[in-house]
Picture 1 (spheres, protein in one colour):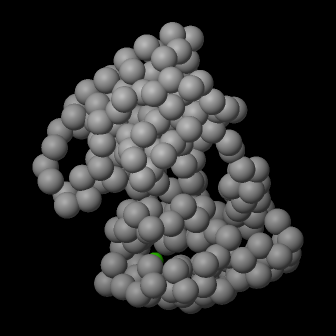
Picture 2: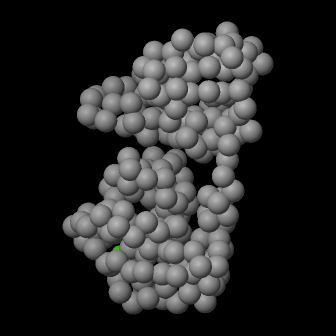
Length: 223
Ligand code: CA
């Protein structure tokens, strides 16, 4: 935690400074940003260890920023919200946020959440041994067996394997596979995953490599 760099994106200047004070006392370095429209650019420039992201921001809201950010970065994000009804959406990981904090919050809570998320992100999870991905040829091997995947199946597996243990919603997977926002149903992802699993099972019947998370989405098994 010491010396972790936190970028606080919050338009209420007083509140942003309060957050900075809490986190500096806990040993973090903090920088502040007060607008939504250029927040993504600022995140990319600063490359922080964690982003505290308010949802209600002028010109571009925190949810849109988080969604856009996930196309380019896996930096840990904690959403800050005053609207309790939003928590379900945040929890459903629709956005790819790592955690959320509800206003009003206590200093202790903020520091505890930040610490927990930083800890999770620093212990790098590794994909199971035996899985080999060759992105130039869209080729995946499991324990030496060629999985013979389609391009879409390969992209799904590669995306999940980049963050083992992390849960991806169907929406996140769809955005990754179809970045042109083509309208496809959630079930499209389920059907690709089903075929992917069938091929994995053919290589290793005991494998639990691609796991369903009930009501949320999918994740890759961690070693
Ligand atoms: Ca706000």
